[in-house]
Amino acid sequence: MRGRSSSSTPQRPGARRFAGVLLAFLIVWAAPVAADDIAPVSSQAARDRAQIDSTVAAMPPPVDEAPVLYVIGVAGDGTEDVFRNEVRFLEDGVAPRLGASARTLALINHADSLDTVPRPLATRENLRHALHAIAPKLRADDLLLLYLTMHGAPDHHLGVVWPPHVDETLAPKELRALLDGAGIGPRIIVVSACYAGGFIPALRAPDTLVITAAAADRPSFGCGSESTITFFGHAWLLDGLNRDRDFTAAYRDAVRAIARREAALGYTPSRPQIDIGKRMRPRLARWLATLPPAAPARYPYPVD
Image (tube, rainbow, N blue to C red; front, side, top):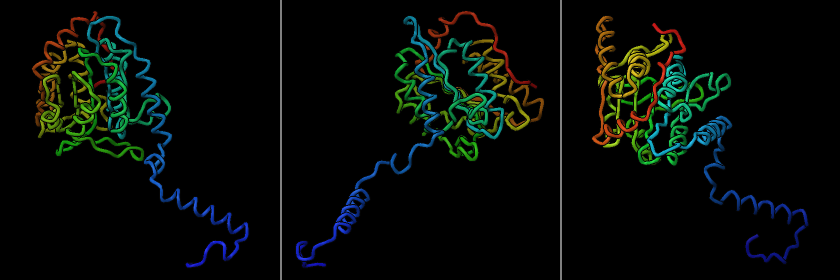
C-alpha cells in the first residue's frame, strides 16, 4: 500500500517469490523485442536460405581472368507448370551451353520444389538473399543473367504466387532496388511476362541488358495450364539461344519467330523489347569469345 515502507508489513516467502517473478515478467515485456523474436523464421524459409547458401557456396571460382556468367532463374507462378518448365530448362539445358552449369541457381514456385526436385521457393526475400549471396563472387567483368518467368499485369507488377505458400508481387523499381542493394554489376535481365516492357525504364543502365517478352502495353502468349513453354520461352530461350548464344542475336531471331506465330494465330502482336546499355556490347563480346563449342540444349517437356 502506498506510504508504507517494505519493513512495516512483513511478507511471506511465497509472496516475495511471486513479486520477483512478476517484476521479471514486466521487465522482459517492456524491453525492446527483436523482429526475429516476434516472428520466428519459418522452417520453409530457413530451408530455402540454407539451399541458396549451399548452392552458391558450391559454385567454383573462375580458373583464369576470363569473364564468366552466373545465372539465376525465377519461376514466379506456381499455379501453372509452364514457368517451372522454363526455369528447369534454363538450369539444366541453357546454363551449360552458356558455360554456367556450375554457377546456376533456380528459385521455383511449384510442388516439385518441396520434395521431388528440392529448390528454394521464388519469393522477394529469397531473391534478395540469392543476389546478396552471389554478389561477392562476381568480379568486375563477370555477368549475371537473371531470367524471370511468370504472369505480369498491366500495372507492371509480376505475380509471385503459389497459394497458400507465396502471395507477392514484384514491381520494376523493387527489382532494381534488389539488384543495386546487393551490389550486382553487369547484368542481363530477361522478363518473360505480359506487359514486361514496363520494366525497362526502371532497369535501364550502362551495364545492363534488358530483354522483355512484350511491350509495356501488350500481353505475351503461351502461358496457361495446357502450355509447356511460353511463346517467348520457345523463341528466345530454346530456339534462339540454340542458334546463337549471343543474347541480342537470339532476341532478333525470337522477335521474328514470335511475330510469325502471333500473325498465324490472329493474336495482337506482343512486341518484345530490348534495351542495351552503352557498356554492355563489349562486355558481352568478351564473354562470348570465351565459350567453347556446345551442343544444342534439348527441352525436356513436349513442345507444340
